[in-house]
Image (cartoon, rainbow, N blue to C red; front, side):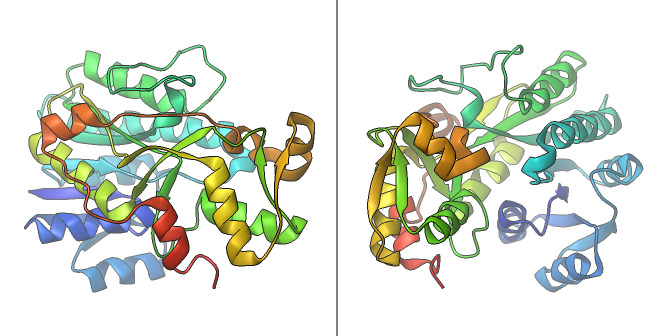
Length: 296
């Protein structure tokens, strides 16, 4: 297949591109900058210049492909609501270009939208009236499915980890360095599901190749890592005290990140493993934090 990939040079998207090429597919990657275009060329992919804010470029890429994998998202949490709206519009543009073709569209979402502290499964749906604006992406996918688009959803866990990670774990490390202590909220038993980025990439490719329309897949290899264990390992590496924070003190330590630090999101991926035959092969979150260059 010729596959159009948004976010093709991102932490997850670049792994998806590698996995697609390894599986024998052709890749058309969306590139916003010269550096991204060169990275795609070096990887062996074709390049389409544009961005997820340029809806015409998205429609053009989708029209040139046999399938689409949408991993792009603007990770500026100071404009989170605005960026969720941009993602909704991007999903709509990609879906409109694929309507009536039966070409698969794979869209990225997050496990944090479901579960509410109990074990989340692929059958759980987010509250459309919930407080997390990221639900807009799931609602956009549901709308496309109703319109007959061959669309499915891959939910990523809070930590997609590995060498080169610039997501939540590096943020926690930076906060520990700044505050002089590695903290966790309450008893630290809240659970973060996790996955290595190359295992996550395989879910996207399997969903493209084998997935059913209007399906939901979970790309997490671990159901939940206690946040306290993450904080403890960070404290060990930085030689800092590891401390519990009350709700009030957690807000002072973590700031805008408090919601994520307190997230209790145990998540199953058993349905995904059974349906797609996915078998995670890479190392777990704590091993990656220990050895994958997080403290350079």
